[in-house]
Length: 163
Image 1 (cartoon, rainbow, N blue to C red):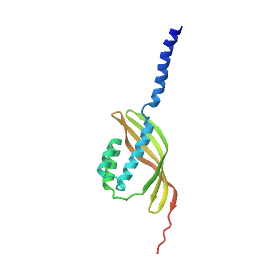
Image 2 (image 1 turned 120 degrees about the horizontal axis):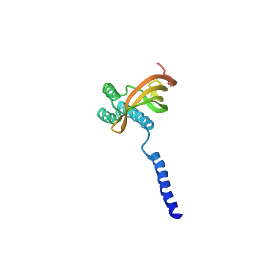
Image 3 (image 1 turned 135 degrees about the vertical axis):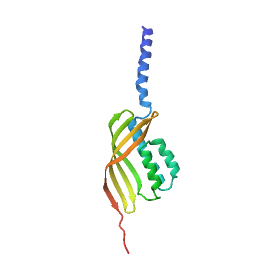
Image 4 (image 1 turned 180 degrees about the vertical axis):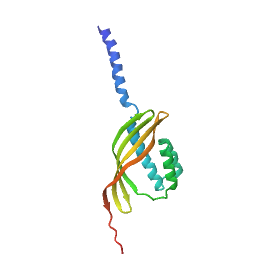
């Protein structure tokens, strides 16, 4: 009888290990998409404020993006003047919902809050975005990041005195 218990214990252990291991595998596409959006924002902001060269930004974007977004961002980087846009203080992705999964493309709708600082003070923008991830060579890359709707939801304007 003891011999049969060993034969039962081995398959049971294999089933347990196989069921637990997927939890330690690579992150899912949703997590990857959120991280790609954050990395993109970080690269663009560092470039905009001269903390990263345009060439380095283009190289790093090429690792996380594909066309058409890559072409659009490279074109924007080359056209920007330093300190032309407001600073992102914090970015919070409120929702990141998958809308479609077709072939090598995953489509999401994301709601993002951007805490910003500009010449007139601090403010928060709430944006709804159309996001598409494309699977290339076993990696997901951002392919589309387009605003559907954006609005300023809070402001903390600085008072300016004119002499």
